[in-house]
Image (cartoon, rainbow, N blue to C red; front, side, top):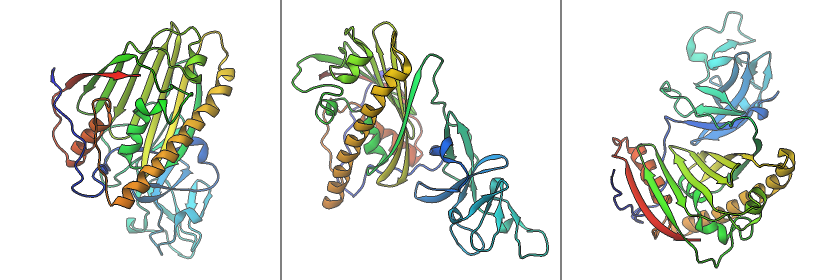
Length: 355
């Protein structure tokens, strides 16, 4: 592969340069458990949506009745259809208008249908394609794991752009300070090698020679200590993954599906799979789940401050160093995809980081 070209942080020539609007991709709109008896209002890419279970499965519609613009999320699910609260118009799978109670004839032409978005339910998550007019050419990925793993799930809304939240989930240096004692602690002087690889739709960093994290999570998952196999990954447009192999059989895979509700509000769906020898999954989950939620709350608070500062100064301004190993590459991938540029050649780079 060719040497990695320099990647600089975006210059502050205009406000909000990191925001990327990518509609022809899949995003998580909700979890399967959230789709019960009532319609669910969600926002994806600035679009108000309503989700419900029709007779054919999860359905996503624009949250606006085509009759008189009333939010369909104010209605009710009846017999596998979504009934508008204003005049009782009913909509089924694909947004098809199937009933107009006051009309003596059948509902009739397609102009009375609600705008529908492609939906796929997989691994307990409901994915929505961001463009109602363009049929999808791909399917959302699986965030599941094999047998023998325990799983922790969480979701939270972050006040930050997709780029900022994605970088946060994969940024190692901040963990010693913002999450002091949970992952790492500041003041260590061990150098590790970071191998960064970027392709057309993803970027990965592998950390070589990293010791077991000194925080609570590391001690729980690998009490024997030693080095770990650690890799962080970003996949266009909205997936991050953190993977640890600790010791001979401990394995942790943390997925984060990021859904931009607006330019600076991102909902995160976290799915953490872990396998720990000699400890039952329920016991590890009892410890890991509250720690994971605490970490998410700390990240959310910091991103809230970051976004408030960006808005106060009227835009973003970044100064990056070599140890900001993934953030600039995430920005690069998002912006190329937004412009529709042709994929670049795969690139590699090696940097050194102190942990």
